[in-house]
Length: 362
Image (cartoon, rainbow, N blue to C red; front, side, top):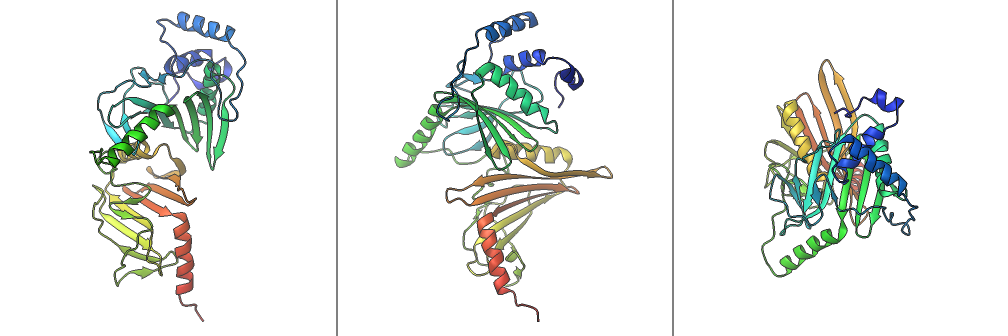
């Protein structure tokens, strides 16, 4: 989706008009005219004061962080399209009154029982590397130059914080997202969930939109990574491990083929593959939107087009508490949508076991 202003003009002139537009959407008070916005921007520049870093934990911002895109922290939001239910919050899609192109996916994170806003996120997938830099410049203008920069793999984050509240700009590959958070409210959601479980009170079932509720970094369709499984007699021993088809107890709607790779000796699941055929571009776009809503922006590994047929692959990653890495890979080619979930450490052990098990050729 293009910027509201042509990039050629963006490159030739000052980005003040874009800055004003972004400021109005990223938490600034609404103004009725461009003249009013320009005047307010000038007043903000005149009032700027030095911002000191907060002991390596982000910055104390020049202005309060109270929410974004028309939503305020602590505000109660009516139930809408739920995309995921987690341990401490509910992720719900929403359509802001004033969307901020080219950011096109908007999520609000709600406390599970009181429906209060604890985080707000906007994200997009783009080929233009100038987007993250443009947004970072605007956030710096509004919240100060003391953002903490961190890097984890291919993901780079800039975080502005003020007490328990903050703003995090994240860039990873083609993914760009802006997350507004209130950690104190998020902690309330986690504590409430824990108390209800301890008292055996009802809690929301973990889930999401149709098809997504059975997919997590722990497993797919009721089959979990690391669990011991009994391979059938016709399982094939490959360089990766034992490869065989399975029927999961909770199949993901629409996905009809499931394969598992298990370690040859311990028989632990190290990888789960599942496919859905006959996927049109429109359906593929919706499934990807659901995946992004559930797991956040992804890194695109490859994208190509041949004879009018487009193919791509992308990845979501999560590091477990024991330091192991789990990856969810998605790919689409020739109308077939494939997903693969694997545990990197378990997969490496399975490959070693397979190499030791496979008879050496004389």
